[in-house]
Image (cartoon, rainbow, N blue to C red; front, side, top):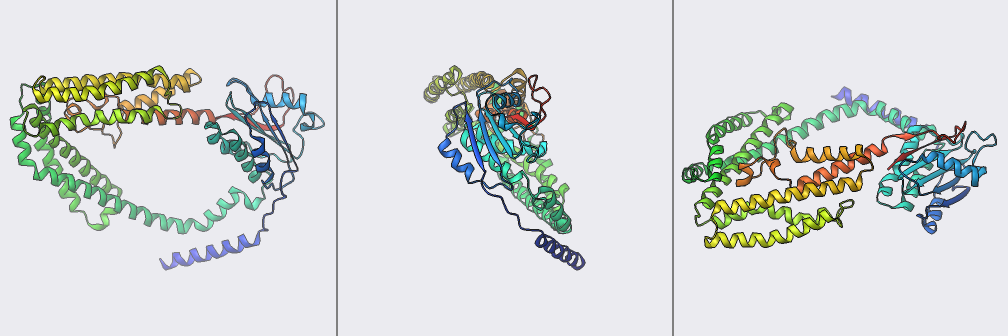
Length: 485
Protein backbone atom coordinates (compact mmCIF):
# COMPACT_ATOMS: atom_id res chain seq x y z
CA UNK A 1 0.00 0.00 0.00
CA UNK A 2 2.95 2.31 0.64
CA UNK A 3 4.07 1.95 -2.97
CA UNK A 4 0.58 2.87 -4.17
CA UNK A 5 0.52 5.93 -1.93
CA UNK A 6 3.91 7.06 -3.26
CA UNK A 7 2.75 6.76 -6.86
CA UNK A 8 -0.39 8.69 -6.10
CA UNK A 9 1.67 11.45 -4.47
CA UNK A 10 3.92 11.78 -7.51
CA UNK A 11 0.94 11.95 -9.89
CA UNK A 12 -0.89 14.55 -7.79
CA UNK A 13 2.27 16.68 -7.65
CA UNK A 14 2.60 16.49 -11.42
CA UNK A 15 -1.00 17.53 -11.80
CA UNK A 16 -0.45 20.54 -9.61
CA UNK A 17 2.47 21.67 -11.74
CA UNK A 18 0.42 21.19 -14.92
CA UNK A 19 -2.59 23.12 -13.67
CA UNK A 20 -0.48 25.98 -12.32
CA UNK A 21 1.33 26.21 -15.65
CA UNK A 22 -1.80 26.90 -17.72
CA UNK A 23 -2.79 30.58 -18.04
CA UNK A 24 -5.62 31.92 -15.97
CA UNK A 25 -8.87 32.18 -17.88
CA UNK A 26 -10.16 35.65 -18.48
CA UNK A 27 -13.49 36.56 -20.00
CA UNK A 28 -13.73 39.37 -22.55
CA UNK A 29 -16.69 40.80 -20.69
CA UNK A 30 -20.36 41.42 -21.17
CA UNK A 31 -22.06 41.03 -24.57
CA UNK A 32 -21.32 43.93 -26.90
CA UNK A 33 -24.98 44.11 -27.95
CA UNK A 34 -28.30 42.50 -27.00
CA UNK A 35 -31.30 42.38 -29.35
CA UNK A 36 -34.58 40.90 -28.09
CA UNK A 37 -37.30 40.00 -30.60
CA UNK A 38 -40.01 38.61 -28.31
CA UNK A 39 -42.75 38.09 -30.90
CA UNK A 40 -44.32 35.43 -28.63
CA UNK A 41 -44.68 37.96 -25.81
CA UNK A 42 -43.38 35.64 -23.09
CA UNK A 43 -40.21 37.40 -21.86
CA UNK A 44 -39.80 39.96 -19.09
CA UNK A 45 -37.23 42.23 -20.73
CA UNK A 46 -36.74 44.26 -17.55
CA UNK A 47 -35.35 41.07 -16.00
CA UNK A 48 -33.83 39.47 -19.11
CA UNK A 49 -31.65 42.29 -20.43
CA UNK A 50 -29.83 43.13 -17.15
CA UNK A 51 -29.31 39.43 -16.47
CA UNK A 52 -27.79 38.83 -19.91
CA UNK A 53 -25.68 42.00 -19.64
CA UNK A 54 -24.07 40.59 -16.49
CA UNK A 55 -22.97 37.37 -18.22
CA UNK A 56 -19.27 37.18 -19.10
CA UNK A 57 -18.20 35.76 -22.49
CA UNK A 58 -14.69 34.71 -23.50
CA UNK A 59 -14.86 36.84 -26.68
CA UNK A 60 -16.93 39.94 -27.51
CA UNK A 61 -20.26 38.51 -28.62
CA UNK A 62 -23.51 39.96 -29.93
CA UNK A 63 -26.60 38.29 -28.45
CA UNK A 64 -29.94 37.95 -30.23
CA UNK A 65 -33.00 36.47 -28.54
CA UNK A 66 -35.94 35.45 -30.73
CA UNK A 67 -39.29 33.96 -29.64
CA UNK A 68 -42.33 33.05 -31.67
CA UNK A 69 -45.49 30.99 -31.22
CA UNK A 70 -45.37 27.99 -33.53
CA UNK A 71 -46.50 24.38 -33.46
CA UNK A 72 -44.93 21.09 -32.47
CA UNK A 73 -44.52 20.23 -36.17
CA UNK A 74 -42.53 23.38 -36.99
CA UNK A 75 -38.82 23.46 -37.85
CA UNK A 76 -37.56 26.20 -35.54
CA UNK A 77 -34.31 26.51 -37.52
CA UNK A 78 -36.29 27.39 -40.63
CA UNK A 79 -38.39 29.95 -38.74
CA UNK A 80 -35.33 31.66 -37.25
CA UNK A 81 -33.64 31.90 -40.65
CA UNK A 82 -36.79 33.30 -42.30
CA UNK A 83 -37.13 35.92 -39.53
CA UNK A 84 -33.47 36.92 -39.86
CA UNK A 85 -33.75 37.28 -43.65
CA UNK A 86 -36.83 39.49 -43.39
CA UNK A 87 -36.11 41.53 -40.27
CA UNK A 88 -32.41 41.24 -39.37
CA UNK A 89 -30.23 40.63 -42.43
CA UNK A 90 -27.25 41.75 -40.31
CA UNK A 91 -27.55 38.41 -38.50
CA UNK A 92 -26.43 36.68 -41.71
CA UNK A 93 -22.97 36.68 -43.29
CA UNK A 94 -22.28 38.78 -46.39
CA UNK A 95 -22.45 35.73 -48.68
CA UNK A 96 -25.80 34.72 -47.21
CA UNK A 97 -24.61 31.21 -46.35
CA UNK A 98 -23.71 31.44 -42.65
CA UNK A 99 -24.61 33.30 -39.50
CA UNK A 100 -22.65 36.52 -39.01
CA UNK A 101 -19.37 36.39 -37.14
CA UNK A 102 -19.46 37.35 -33.47
CA UNK A 103 -23.17 36.46 -33.19
CA UNK A 104 -25.06 34.08 -30.90
CA UNK A 105 -28.83 33.60 -31.35
CA UNK A 106 -31.02 31.98 -28.71
CA UNK A 107 -34.50 31.05 -30.00
CA UNK A 108 -37.63 29.83 -28.21
CA UNK A 109 -41.01 28.57 -29.36
CA UNK A 110 -43.09 28.26 -26.15
CA UNK A 111 -46.16 26.85 -27.91
CA UNK A 112 -44.48 24.31 -30.20
CA UNK A 113 -42.02 23.75 -27.33
CA UNK A 114 -38.75 24.07 -29.22
CA UNK A 115 -35.48 25.73 -28.25
CA UNK A 116 -32.68 26.58 -30.69
CA UNK A 117 -29.13 27.91 -30.67
CA UNK A 118 -27.31 29.50 -33.65
CA UNK A 119 -23.91 31.14 -34.00
CA UNK A 120 -21.36 32.61 -36.35
CA UNK A 121 -18.50 30.45 -37.57
CA UNK A 122 -16.10 32.13 -35.13
CA UNK A 123 -18.42 31.34 -32.24
CA UNK A 124 -19.62 27.87 -33.16
CA UNK A 125 -19.48 24.91 -30.83
CA UNK A 126 -20.09 21.21 -31.41
CA UNK A 127 -23.56 19.72 -31.86
CA UNK A 128 -23.19 18.08 -28.46
CA UNK A 129 -22.37 21.43 -26.85
CA UNK A 130 -25.32 23.08 -28.60
CA UNK A 131 -27.48 20.37 -27.03
CA UNK A 132 -25.86 21.15 -23.67
CA UNK A 133 -26.83 24.83 -24.01
CA UNK A 134 -30.40 23.92 -24.90
CA UNK A 135 -30.64 21.39 -22.07
CA UNK A 136 -29.62 24.07 -19.57
CA UNK A 137 -32.91 25.85 -20.26
CA UNK A 138 -35.34 22.95 -20.63
CA UNK A 139 -36.25 22.23 -17.02
CA UNK A 140 -37.21 25.88 -16.57
CA UNK A 141 -39.06 25.96 -19.88
CA UNK A 142 -41.06 22.87 -18.93
CA UNK A 143 -42.21 24.87 -15.92
CA UNK A 144 -43.10 27.84 -18.20
CA UNK A 145 -40.29 29.97 -16.73
CA UNK A 146 -39.45 31.49 -20.10
CA UNK A 147 -37.25 34.40 -18.96
CA UNK A 148 -35.22 32.39 -16.45
CA UNK A 149 -34.82 29.54 -18.93
CA UNK A 150 -33.52 31.94 -21.60
CA UNK A 151 -31.00 33.41 -19.17
CA UNK A 152 -29.87 29.92 -18.14
CA UNK A 153 -29.33 28.93 -21.77
CA UNK A 154 -27.33 32.07 -22.58
CA UNK A 155 -25.26 31.65 -19.43
CA UNK A 156 -24.35 28.10 -20.48
CA UNK A 157 -23.51 29.37 -23.97
CA UNK A 158 -21.08 31.88 -22.44
CA UNK A 159 -19.33 29.02 -20.66
CA UNK A 160 -18.84 27.02 -23.87
CA UNK A 161 -18.39 29.52 -26.71
CA UNK A 162 -14.67 30.10 -27.40
CA UNK A 163 -13.85 28.24 -24.21
CA UNK A 164 -10.05 28.07 -23.63
CA UNK A 165 -8.65 24.58 -24.16
CA UNK A 166 -7.58 24.28 -20.52
CA UNK A 167 -11.15 25.01 -19.39
CA UNK A 168 -12.70 22.32 -21.55
CA UNK A 169 -14.37 19.33 -19.95
CA UNK A 170 -12.25 16.99 -22.06
CA UNK A 171 -8.99 18.46 -20.80
CA UNK A 172 -10.05 18.55 -17.16
CA UNK A 173 -11.39 15.02 -17.31
CA UNK A 174 -8.19 13.78 -18.91
CA UNK A 175 -6.04 15.51 -16.32
CA UNK A 176 -7.99 14.35 -13.33
CA UNK A 177 -8.59 10.86 -14.63
CA UNK A 178 -4.90 10.47 -15.36
CA UNK A 179 -3.91 11.65 -11.93
CA UNK A 180 -6.76 10.26 -9.94
CA UNK A 181 -7.25 6.84 -11.46
CA UNK A 182 -4.92 5.03 -9.13
CA UNK A 183 -6.24 6.84 -6.06
CA UNK A 184 -9.83 6.43 -7.15
CA UNK A 185 -9.32 2.78 -7.94
CA UNK A 186 -8.06 2.04 -4.46
CA UNK A 187 -10.58 4.33 -2.79
CA UNK A 188 -13.47 2.97 -4.84
CA UNK A 189 -12.54 -0.60 -3.98
CA UNK A 190 -12.48 0.25 -0.28
CA UNK A 191 -15.65 2.31 -0.51
CA UNK A 192 -17.63 -0.38 -2.32
CA UNK A 193 -16.59 -2.97 0.21
CA UNK A 194 -17.50 -0.65 3.09
CA UNK A 195 -20.88 0.25 1.60
CA UNK A 196 -21.65 -3.40 0.85
CA UNK A 197 -20.74 -4.39 4.41
CA UNK A 198 -23.00 -1.66 5.86
CA UNK A 199 -25.90 -2.65 3.60
CA UNK A 200 -25.42 -6.28 4.50
CA UNK A 201 -25.63 -5.50 8.20
CA UNK A 202 -28.75 -3.38 7.70
CA UNK A 203 -30.45 -6.21 5.83
CA UNK A 204 -29.52 -8.69 8.55
CA UNK A 205 -30.86 -6.32 11.22
CA UNK A 206 -34.08 -5.90 9.23
CA UNK A 207 -34.42 -9.65 8.88
CA UNK A 208 -33.70 -10.24 12.56
CA UNK A 209 -36.51 -7.88 13.63
CA UNK A 210 -39.09 -9.59 11.42
CA UNK A 211 -37.83 -13.09 12.19
CA UNK A 212 -37.94 -12.39 15.92
CA UNK A 213 -41.55 -11.23 15.66
CA UNK A 214 -42.54 -14.33 13.72
CA UNK A 215 -40.73 -16.66 16.12
CA UNK A 216 -42.28 -15.11 19.24
CA UNK A 217 -45.77 -15.26 17.72
CA UNK A 218 -45.38 -18.70 16.14
CA UNK A 219 -47.56 -20.53 18.64
CA UNK A 220 -50.21 -17.80 18.60
CA UNK A 221 -50.18 -17.81 14.78
CA UNK A 222 -50.92 -21.52 14.74
CA UNK A 223 -53.75 -21.05 17.25
CA UNK A 224 -55.23 -18.23 15.15
CA UNK A 225 -55.02 -20.29 11.98
CA UNK A 226 -56.74 -23.18 13.75
CA UNK A 227 -59.86 -21.12 14.43
CA UNK A 228 -60.25 -19.25 11.12
CA UNK A 229 -63.56 -20.44 9.61
CA UNK A 230 -62.84 -22.44 6.47
CA UNK A 231 -66.42 -21.82 5.33
CA UNK A 232 -65.56 -18.15 4.82
CA UNK A 233 -64.41 -17.26 1.30
CA UNK A 234 -61.76 -14.99 2.74
CA UNK A 235 -60.85 -17.34 5.56
CA UNK A 236 -60.29 -20.28 3.20
CA UNK A 237 -57.91 -18.23 1.02
CA UNK A 238 -55.90 -17.03 4.02
CA UNK A 239 -55.68 -20.62 5.26
CA UNK A 240 -54.39 -21.66 1.85
CA UNK A 241 -51.50 -19.23 2.34
CA UNK A 242 -50.97 -20.55 5.87
CA UNK A 243 -50.48 -24.13 4.70
CA UNK A 244 -46.97 -23.24 3.50
CA UNK A 245 -46.24 -21.01 6.49
CA UNK A 246 -44.22 -23.53 8.52
CA UNK A 247 -42.13 -24.69 5.55
CA UNK A 248 -41.36 -21.06 4.67
CA UNK A 249 -40.48 -20.41 8.30
CA UNK A 250 -38.05 -23.35 8.22
CA UNK A 251 -36.44 -22.02 5.03
CA UNK A 252 -36.10 -18.57 6.61
CA UNK A 253 -34.54 -20.13 9.70
CA UNK A 254 -31.94 -21.75 7.46
CA UNK A 255 -31.22 -18.37 5.84
CA UNK A 256 -30.88 -16.80 9.28
CA UNK A 257 -28.31 -19.41 10.28
CA UNK A 258 -26.37 -18.81 7.07
CA UNK A 259 -26.15 -15.02 7.36
CA UNK A 260 -25.21 -15.14 11.03
CA UNK A 261 -22.42 -17.60 10.24
CA UNK A 262 -20.81 -15.20 7.74
CA UNK A 263 -17.37 -13.96 8.85
CA UNK A 264 -16.82 -10.20 8.91
CA UNK A 265 -14.78 -10.18 5.68
CA UNK A 266 -17.55 -12.01 3.83
CA UNK A 267 -20.04 -9.22 4.62
CA UNK A 268 -18.25 -7.04 2.06
CA UNK A 269 -19.16 -9.35 -0.81
CA UNK A 270 -22.12 -8.85 -3.13
CA UNK A 271 -23.05 -12.52 -2.75
CA UNK A 272 -23.45 -12.05 1.00
CA UNK A 273 -25.56 -8.93 0.50
CA UNK A 274 -27.92 -10.86 -1.78
CA UNK A 275 -28.20 -13.62 0.83
CA UNK A 276 -28.90 -11.11 3.61
CA UNK A 277 -31.53 -9.36 1.48
CA UNK A 278 -33.23 -12.69 0.73
CA UNK A 279 -33.34 -13.44 4.46
CA UNK A 280 -34.77 -10.02 5.28
CA UNK A 281 -37.40 -10.13 2.52
CA UNK A 282 -38.56 -13.64 3.43
CA UNK A 283 -38.79 -12.77 7.11
CA UNK A 284 -40.74 -9.57 6.34
CA UNK A 285 -43.27 -11.47 4.24
CA UNK A 286 -43.77 -14.03 7.02
CA UNK A 287 -44.15 -11.24 9.57
CA UNK A 288 -46.84 -9.62 7.42
CA UNK A 289 -48.65 -12.92 6.85
CA UNK A 290 -48.87 -13.81 10.54
CA UNK A 291 -50.50 -10.41 11.13
CA UNK A 292 -53.05 -11.17 8.40
CA UNK A 293 -53.75 -14.57 9.97
CA UNK A 294 -54.37 -12.87 13.33
CA UNK A 295 -56.60 -10.21 11.73
CA UNK A 296 -58.58 -12.83 9.78
CA UNK A 297 -59.28 -14.78 12.95
CA UNK A 298 -60.28 -11.66 14.91
CA UNK A 299 -62.47 -10.14 12.19
CA UNK A 300 -64.18 -13.22 10.78
CA UNK A 301 -64.95 -14.57 14.28
CA UNK A 302 -65.83 -11.10 15.60
CA UNK A 303 -63.39 -11.46 18.48
CA UNK A 304 -62.84 -8.62 20.95
CA UNK A 305 -60.08 -7.14 18.79
CA UNK A 306 -62.09 -7.08 15.55
CA UNK A 307 -62.29 -3.22 15.38
CA UNK A 308 -58.49 -3.02 15.29
CA UNK A 309 -58.32 -5.75 12.65
CA UNK A 310 -60.98 -3.95 10.57
CA UNK A 311 -59.09 -0.67 10.78
CA UNK A 312 -56.03 -2.40 9.35
CA UNK A 313 -58.10 -3.62 6.38
CA UNK A 314 -59.31 -0.09 5.75
CA UNK A 315 -55.85 1.47 6.03
CA UNK A 316 -54.70 1.00 2.38
CA UNK A 317 -58.01 2.41 1.07
CA UNK A 318 -57.89 5.36 3.47
CA UNK A 319 -54.32 6.05 2.35
CA UNK A 320 -55.40 6.11 -1.29
CA UNK A 321 -58.28 8.48 -0.58
CA UNK A 322 -56.01 10.79 1.43
CA UNK A 323 -53.47 10.91 -1.40
CA UNK A 324 -55.90 11.81 -4.19
CA UNK A 325 -55.75 15.59 -3.81
CA UNK A 326 -51.96 15.68 -3.98
CA UNK A 327 -52.10 13.53 -7.11
CA UNK A 328 -54.65 15.80 -8.76
CA UNK A 329 -52.80 18.99 -7.87
CA UNK A 330 -49.59 17.88 -9.61
CA UNK A 331 -48.43 19.78 -12.65
CA UNK A 332 -49.95 17.99 -15.67
CA UNK A 333 -52.22 16.16 -13.20
CA UNK A 334 -55.37 17.41 -15.02
CA UNK A 335 -56.91 18.42 -11.71
CA UNK A 336 -59.75 20.35 -13.36
CA UNK A 337 -60.86 17.51 -15.64
CA UNK A 338 -64.08 15.51 -15.49
CA UNK A 339 -62.19 12.39 -14.38
CA UNK A 340 -60.61 14.39 -11.54
CA UNK A 341 -64.06 15.56 -10.45
CA UNK A 342 -65.23 11.93 -10.47
CA UNK A 343 -62.32 10.95 -8.23
CA UNK A 344 -63.05 13.74 -5.75
CA UNK A 345 -66.73 12.82 -5.65
CA UNK A 346 -65.86 9.17 -5.08
CA UNK A 347 -63.45 10.12 -2.28
CA UNK A 348 -66.06 12.15 -0.43
CA UNK A 349 -68.69 9.43 -0.84
CA UNK A 350 -66.27 6.68 0.23
CA UNK A 351 -65.29 8.46 3.44
CA UNK A 352 -68.97 8.49 4.40
CA UNK A 353 -69.39 4.86 3.31
CA UNK A 354 -66.46 3.70 5.45
CA UNK A 355 -68.16 5.07 8.54
CA UNK A 356 -71.43 3.38 7.57
CA UNK A 357 -69.77 0.00 6.94
CA UNK A 358 -68.08 0.15 10.33
CA UNK A 359 -71.33 1.02 12.09
CA UNK A 360 -73.20 -1.76 10.27
CA UNK A 361 -70.46 -4.22 11.15
CA UNK A 362 -70.59 -3.19 14.79
CA UNK A 363 -74.33 -3.69 15.16
CA UNK A 364 -74.41 -6.88 13.12
CA UNK A 365 -76.33 -5.46 10.17
CA UNK A 366 -73.66 -6.88 7.87
CA UNK A 367 -71.27 -9.80 8.31
CA UNK A 368 -67.47 -9.46 8.17
CA UNK A 369 -67.53 -11.10 4.71
CA UNK A 370 -70.02 -8.52 3.48
CA UNK A 371 -67.90 -5.71 4.89
CA UNK A 372 -64.86 -7.08 3.04
CA UNK A 373 -66.96 -7.42 -0.12
CA UNK A 374 -67.93 -3.76 0.10
CA UNK A 375 -64.32 -2.76 0.62
CA UNK A 376 -63.30 -4.88 -2.36
CA UNK A 377 -65.97 -3.26 -4.56
CA UNK A 378 -64.93 0.24 -3.48
CA UNK A 379 -61.25 -0.39 -4.16
CA UNK A 380 -62.11 -1.92 -7.53
CA UNK A 381 -64.14 1.18 -8.38
CA UNK A 382 -61.26 3.43 -7.35
CA UNK A 383 -58.99 1.41 -9.64
CA UNK A 384 -61.37 2.02 -12.56
CA UNK A 385 -61.53 5.75 -11.85
CA UNK A 386 -57.73 5.98 -11.62
CA UNK A 387 -57.39 4.15 -14.92
CA UNK A 388 -59.83 6.62 -16.52
CA UNK A 389 -57.91 9.55 -15.07
CA UNK A 390 -54.63 8.06 -16.28
CA UNK A 391 -56.02 8.24 -19.80
CA UNK A 392 -57.02 11.87 -19.20
CA UNK A 393 -53.48 12.70 -18.07
CA UNK A 394 -51.98 10.87 -21.05
CA UNK A 395 -54.23 12.65 -23.55
CA UNK A 396 -53.47 15.99 -21.91
CA UNK A 397 -49.70 15.61 -21.96
CA UNK A 398 -48.88 13.47 -25.00
CA UNK A 399 -48.56 15.27 -28.32
CA UNK A 400 -48.97 12.20 -30.48
CA UNK A 401 -49.83 8.52 -30.30
CA UNK A 402 -46.20 7.45 -29.85
CA UNK A 403 -45.92 9.56 -26.69
CA UNK A 404 -49.30 8.31 -25.48
CA UNK A 405 -48.20 4.72 -26.03
CA UNK A 406 -44.97 5.35 -24.07
CA UNK A 407 -46.89 6.82 -21.15
CA UNK A 408 -49.34 3.90 -21.12
CA UNK A 409 -46.44 1.46 -21.06
CA UNK A 410 -44.97 3.20 -18.01
CA UNK A 411 -48.35 3.26 -16.27
CA UNK A 412 -48.88 -0.43 -17.00
CA UNK A 413 -45.37 -1.31 -15.82
CA UNK A 414 -45.93 0.50 -12.52
CA UNK A 415 -49.32 -1.17 -12.10
CA UNK A 416 -48.42 -4.73 -12.96
CA UNK A 417 -44.67 -5.12 -12.81
CA UNK A 418 -42.43 -6.42 -10.01
CA UNK A 419 -41.04 -3.64 -7.87
CA UNK A 420 -38.54 -5.14 -5.43
CA UNK A 421 -35.87 -7.65 -6.47
CA UNK A 422 -38.27 -9.49 -8.74
CA UNK A 423 -40.97 -9.82 -6.06
CA UNK A 424 -44.37 -8.24 -6.44
CA UNK A 425 -45.47 -5.88 -3.72
CA UNK A 426 -47.33 -7.60 -0.90
CA UNK A 427 -50.05 -5.70 0.89
CA UNK A 428 -50.36 -7.04 4.48
CA UNK A 429 -54.14 -7.18 4.53
CA UNK A 430 -56.83 -9.80 4.01
CA UNK A 431 -57.66 -8.44 0.53
CA UNK A 432 -53.97 -8.16 -0.28
CA UNK A 433 -53.52 -11.83 0.67
CA UNK A 434 -56.58 -13.06 -1.23
CA UNK A 435 -56.00 -11.08 -4.42
CA UNK A 436 -52.85 -10.25 -6.41
CA UNK A 437 -51.46 -6.80 -5.70
CA UNK A 438 -52.15 -5.55 -9.23
CA UNK A 439 -55.86 -6.22 -8.66
CA UNK A 440 -56.04 -2.68 -7.28
CA UNK A 441 -54.63 0.43 -8.97
CA UNK A 442 -53.41 2.47 -6.01
CA UNK A 443 -52.57 6.15 -5.79
CA UNK A 444 -48.94 5.28 -5.07
CA UNK A 445 -48.83 3.14 -8.21
CA UNK A 446 -50.46 5.91 -10.24
CA UNK A 447 -47.88 8.42 -8.97
CA UNK A 448 -45.03 6.09 -9.88
CA UNK A 449 -46.34 5.50 -13.40
CA UNK A 450 -47.17 9.20 -13.83
CA UNK A 451 -43.65 10.30 -12.86
CA UNK A 452 -41.83 7.76 -15.02
CA UNK A 453 -44.21 8.37 -17.93
CA UNK A 454 -43.76 12.15 -17.91
CA UNK A 455 -39.99 11.74 -17.50
CA UNK A 456 -39.72 9.27 -20.37
CA UNK A 457 -41.68 11.49 -22.74
CA UNK A 458 -39.66 14.57 -21.77
CA UNK A 459 -36.44 12.63 -22.35
CA UNK A 460 -37.69 11.47 -25.74
CA UNK A 461 -38.64 15.02 -26.70
CA UNK A 462 -35.27 16.38 -25.76
CA UNK A 463 -33.29 13.48 -27.14
CA UNK A 464 -33.02 14.53 -30.80
CA UNK A 465 -31.67 17.65 -32.47
CA UNK A 466 -32.80 19.20 -35.74
CA UNK A 467 -29.95 20.73 -37.73
CA UNK A 468 -31.39 21.50 -41.18
CA UNK A 469 -33.12 24.71 -42.26
CA UNK A 470 -36.08 23.15 -44.06
CA UNK A 471 -37.34 23.55 -47.60
CA UNK A 472 -36.93 27.34 -47.59
CA UNK A 473 -33.39 27.35 -46.27
CA UNK A 474 -31.80 26.79 -49.65
CA UNK A 475 -28.04 26.44 -49.44
CA UNK A 476 -27.80 28.11 -46.03
CA UNK A 477 -25.52 26.12 -43.74
CA UNK A 478 -25.01 28.24 -40.66
CA UNK A 479 -24.06 26.53 -37.40
CA UNK A 480 -27.19 25.84 -35.39
CA UNK A 481 -29.74 23.31 -34.19
CA UNK A 482 -32.96 23.01 -32.21
CA UNK A 483 -34.63 20.42 -29.99
CA UNK A 484 -37.87 19.90 -28.14
CA UNK A 485 -38.57 20.25 -24.43
